[in-house]
Length: 129
Image (cartoon, rainbow, N blue to C red; front, side, top):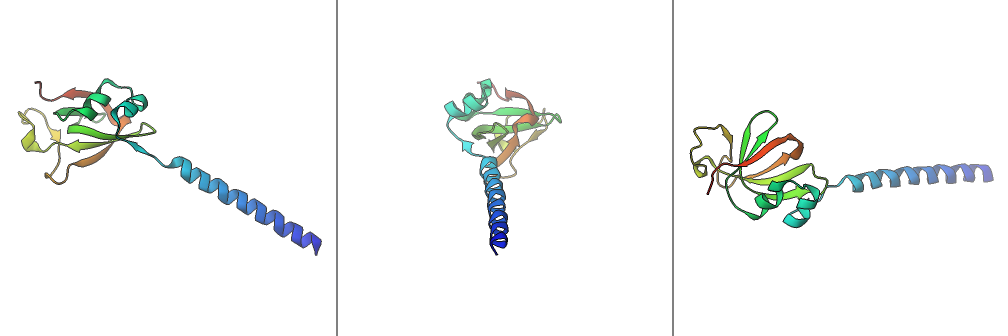
């Protein structure tokens, strides 16, 4: 009887250890979004991080596929530096948008987007002041 109880105890302990490890992996994998420009610049130290988070302007993000995403600002950056949430511009907001094919918002109330940072190869101002 003692042997059976020992085996049950060992199996329960191992199952508990496995479940705890799986939960730890889930907690570790959660991503937080930073909306503070100073803290975000520590995660993604590119020139455009703080500028595009503090200003509302006409910015273009060129992707690895050659598309340009027209944004008004970056609203948050993930704490792991892999994602950014942006506010897209609408086609009507971008002057001279006939020269470049831009990815824009489809409507005024559909401006939010998340972008993988590793897919961005260039950032620039679409309009100069």
